[in-house]
Length: 331
Image (cartoon, rainbow, N blue to C red; front, side, top):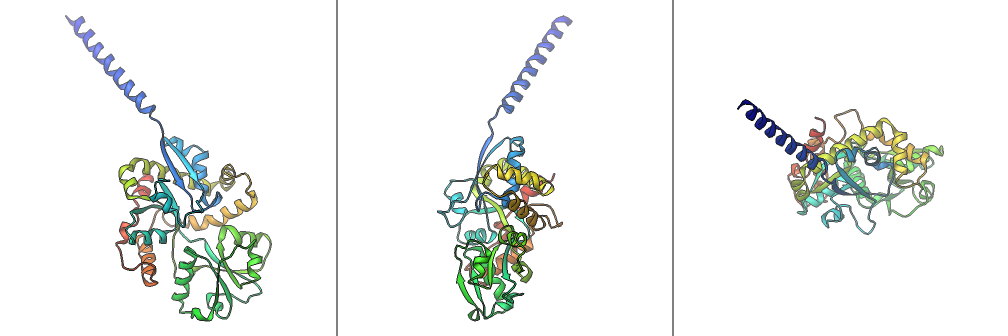
């Protein structure tokens, strides 16, 4: 009798073990989730953390297959690709998402990479320009998109009379020296003209809108409300792997540069490495953790856009972003 009971128990345990093993095997065999990302520009160390996450296997560890697409120059902003369904996730400017949200477009930011905006005005040493107030009586290049917003807000905050500035639209210049032939101050990013000017030993002054009351984040990661609601686990895994990639990139810029060049071997290693090193203090400010967004900064960005007329009416800024995934990634 006891032998039969033992046999029955053994059979049950064996069957249960088999079921568990089969379930585990089935779970392990699940294909990776496909995630398509649209970058805001061409491949460069501006997106180093994502290249590291891809090349060092962080996305694979999260059972993700991530495709990183460079900017689509036929579109004005990356969220057009995301709204059209061409990409699941985009990298863009926070003001673009605030403006889009004010127009009823269902987009939400899930992390911010640059805590300090890398957009800067470079004034030649010969121009005599040291501050934005010195723009008066000078020719200044004004770039479209984010550049216009940051420039307009900076000038307005300082009470500068724009009619006294000879503003010309952005053009295609070979380098900052070419731009300085037609203007006293030219806009660009830290990782581009500023780094190159330093490497060439050029004399210049860097004017940061963030120093003049324009505290905008940059390179925010966003998706549609629908994608986030339907795929919270995928979003969580993507954010966790991406932030891990960025942490590694900041700790090992050489590795990050190597991984970046794997996406475009024609890039100049020295320029890309210098650009990343210049970006590190803008990403890791020593305040909070990478990706985290302060509510007061979002409110300030919103209020500047409203005051300058870039949005027609106030919106609930809490609907524009969420720290949920960044916070969970730290657990």
